[in-house]
Length: 549
Image (cartoon, rainbow, N blue to C red; front, side, top):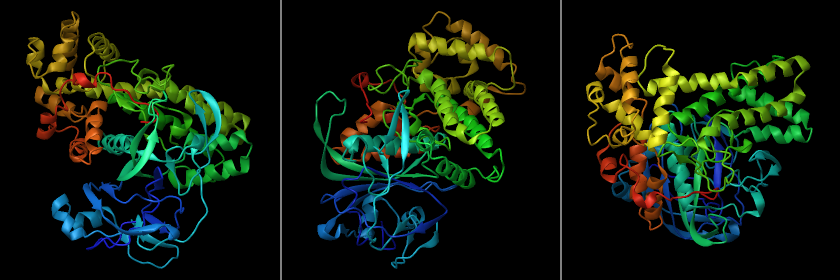
């Protein structure tokens, strides 16, 4: 894609970008580069904006910047548009250095069309050759009901057939949401896909956001996703459902060999070991979601990664007022995917995975696999307890820890206390302030919960429990807690504010959120000014998102 990065970006072959949705790629340390011609139908509008952020790479922080791409000519018959950008003249304006760009987006300079390994390379210069469309075959148990084979509605390979006769185009609104949230989750230390770039087109996209007949024109956009793999539970369900067992076995062996190095692909119990690993990692992932108040919104089996990473950011939401019944997705009429039910949905989806594996298991292995699945609730509860004990700064073990956590969550629910800021402010307040029940004004979330008549009782139990933290000072407790309780998460009102500005070509708040969410545990002056650690503004109380979001 991006070429000539040393000084000038020329011949930018992005003709496919304007009308495609989200191109998914798997990140490999050594990419096999081959040039492919994108479908001629997929043409870009006259201008676009590209917000480029760091690619996922161990130990790479990278930088983000906004790059304005100026069109100088296009050739629809050849299926491409040329783009010319004077990178050097853009650097000062966008505060981007060429060194950072090259480090973040290594480019293969060779234009010849042959397969080769290029270390860490993601982008290539030459124009691609024609190819046939490819689709990631996947099925889905959708809202608990078998929905058979689907085209990909959002994450797609080149030239994929779209789901439900869709046009395969994303809008700026949903793209900004995914771009920001996947990065936010990464810096919250939660396994996730990453967002490598956001490209915004002036092409018109018509969408009925809430499926109520109100169709409006929106701007198109593309998010470039990066992950080690895009295989989901649904990738296996479809093969098992249609009895393609040889292909199922072949795919499973490939996944194990590529992504589960601790499992011997020649081991007779390899599928059992694979299932055990996925069960354990899924339990840990959902517990991590809960620890930051994250509701995925649409936990169908095609949205559950076999690598137990968070994928497919659509109608997600970070819980504001604590509510176990929180449902960010207005399309979820039955509240199936409410935040308090995510652990149960995890077990439901793992059961669907087991059903897909069963044809490859012998009777003994089937029995053992069922026992592994039965152990899922214990794995989840254990990890949930560990995470919430850390959020409260508790060391060691105590029989009353579960009750202490449940007591606090009960008070938060009854007072509608902010989930994120309650734990964060517990990280910042001193024990003496708690003991005196003198909550400073800046701790607005704690002041809210302190109105409950049982708050003093909880404080007494909490302070008593903290005394069992042997050789632990109050300053050490607070320091420890601030490393696990974020001050900033991507609440829907924040991203809505950024989207509204981006619709007017003002990406300043998108950039601000990028900067803030990269360090969610540290206080940020601009974030404080923007109110990101303040109560939800009144205008945002009734914000809604849907599967179109």
